[in-house]
Length: 296
Image (cartoon, rainbow, N blue to C red; front, side):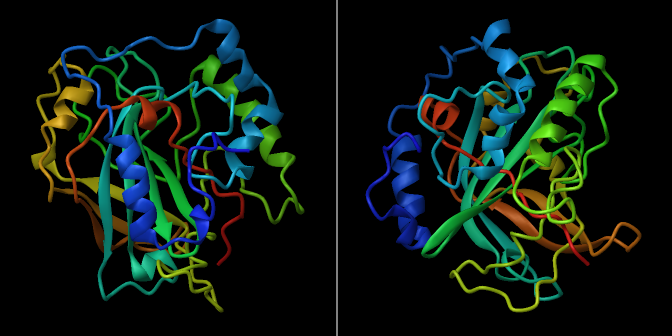
């Protein structure tokens, strides 16, 4: 069950109506940039990440809101903007990788460690009459060291495996969660570092199902250097994101059909609002992980 703040029949609404509802909640009570929360869950709360059944909910919950009573344990603090995924005419893919769509991008750090900066993005594309399609992308779960420019590296759904012991342990729990998803091993994601895109390629922004799905194996978000800042900047990342104007091209979108295919630019991700940091987008807004394996 979700946090029960969304209206009855929410999933059946149009994408634009759902965006309006969520944005009204995200932007209702923004944090002051001079008083941003920094508290993170303690050790005992973080231990939930070692429980496969806890991690499994990331794949099985269909709501745009966090399940009731669930706490966000990583990427705790972020900033969210309304966005449009614009897909160019050259795209040979299906679903949202053909139609594009509107929704939200939440930019955050995996952990509050500015000496090992670990940026990532969750993207939610809202669908007419159906649940949203979501994807999570990062450069590396190990972070990018002391470079504090959020837009220094590209993000991808194919993420290098972790090198730190702690992240390897967490990764094993996540893999066990994947093993507990419905279907056979050929139906489930390949693993924690491969965030598949088959589901997102199965439906268009207007809710039409695709007969013959053509899903990219890999999608990379190549940052717009103009959106970034000095890598030595120690200001809270949310303050820097708050300064990005509406209408900014955040990322160029590039895709590969298969692991060995050549990358091709297929679109852009553009902001249609300012970034907002708020309690709702930190605690309640939910981005589901895709549960179906990529297929050629």
